[in-house]
Every structure is written in structure tokens, then in C-alpha cells.
Length: 202
Image (cartoon, rainbow, N blue to C red; front, side):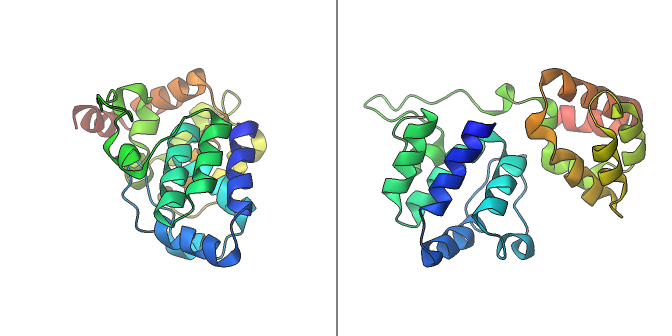
């Protein structure tokens, strides 16, 4: 995660104050892939480059976060910075239309595979889980000692509402491997079986 985070931070720190403000305003309106939540306006606008880098990684993960950041940079006229970010991350030369449509650049414009199957259940349904999980403490108990440290466990429990607890829980997700996400899914199946079934069928 360190290399990706550093690339995001370098790109944002290359912006002037006015360009950085335009970037954040555009981020509030750019279309997002299904399953991803928008960073709240009140949280986003006061952020500096370091804080926004952390939010981009925690909200959108590395791969989609890179594409989204490049898309927004291009939309505010910062094509050179976007290209530098893509080159650093080895993603190639992607245009705004390519990122929106999910197609490869080139004469054939053949579509990429849909992003959803490549995503784990908890990544694919992140926004819905944040909004709809009610028994967060039950989930935390199942993850404590296996996925969450004592400090992380307490940080989530300290939040007052279920959505903010889930959002804090997902803020640790970029450091998780597939096993950690499988454990979260199993905890959700045990504590919220009807919600998991509904999201699986949606």
C-alpha cells in the first residue's frame, strides 16, 4: 500500500492551492462505481493532501482509487499530473472516457471485464454494508484478535452510530488480505444473514 499511497500523495502535492480546491470540488460530483460511497463534503473540503490521500485509499482502495484520482485530475485540466500518476503505478495511458466506460484505449476499444466479479463481497457492497449493518458489535467480537487489534477494536466501538462504526471498520480494510475479508464476510453471515442474502441476490 505504501507505494500507491506515495504516488497519490505526490500527485496531490504537485497541485497548487487553487488546483487542489478544484480537485476536491470535482471529487464531490464525479460519477462513482456502484458499491463505493462518496467522501462527505464536510469531511473532504478541509483536508490537506496527506489526509485526502488516506481517505482516497480507505474509501476506494488502491486500484479504483488510482483510476478515480487520474480521472478527476484530467477533468480539472491536470493531464500531466494524471499521466505521471498512471506511469508511477504502471497503469498506462488512460483517458477520462476510458476510465468512465471501463474500456481499454486503442483501436479495438474492447470492453474490460466487469469490475464487480473481481471484487470481494465486502468491497463490492461496501456502501450498503456501512448503511445497513446494525449489529456491529457482534461483527467486532468475531473479528477481534483475528483481524482487528485491541486499538482498532476500541476505535470502532468508540463511534456512536452503526454507520460510523462500519465506516471506521472499513478504514482498516486497505491493510487486509483475502483471509481477513473472508472472516468479515463470515461474521456478517453469522450476525446479519438476511442482509448478506439480500446483497448477494441484488
